[in-house]
Length: 293
Image 1: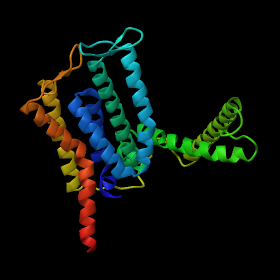
Image 2: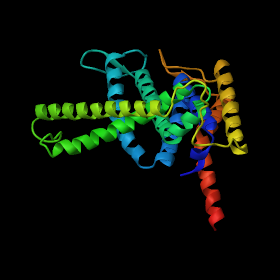
Image 3: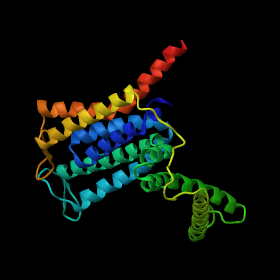
Image 4: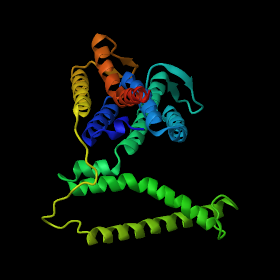
């Protein structure tokens, strides 16, 4: 997959900052629905079938959070049913719970896209000159989680041959074996970090007066400039609309949201923004197919 992955890091950074901040701060049901749809479609297009596994993992948390909110939050005026405790489960609470869960799932999906598109070389290239330590820190954070997961799997397979099986025996023994596997994996990660630090020091990292270079060079062409312009224009329109009250909504005491021509304008801008990487990938994939004919 090429497309958005081969774009200049500035274009990807501008897009993901805009889409994730707007998703988090403008929680209108219309905006959450659009963000959820395009985040899932983009993640499937960029990452493939492994996103389905991530969705299946987040789905139980979504259901549990909605259930807990219904149990303890009885705000709202539209009563659906009464719980054995006497609390009322309301339609407004249900809508709020589904909306909040959809917002969290969409953020998870966008972050899954970030890990695929904004690779460590892009982070280092983007921040290498202005904030090298910040760039290194972000790239190491993005790399640490999948690396730790891989080491845990490798350690579990190795420990299985010496009788430390995390899938067999009693529950208590499995917990003990899992803690042992986790301890070994963390120790291996710490040792690897120490070796990396020693290697970086030996290669002259952090010396004053040394100009940093990047092993990957990205060109900022017209297509990247067009993508950044679309992100800035759509974001500006959405922020202006939010400040003007075009995205107004409330869940309590009764659910209501603004729905008029101005709301539609901001929603179209939001859909254009969310669909940008998907459109880029589909367009460039079609162009490459035409070139091969």
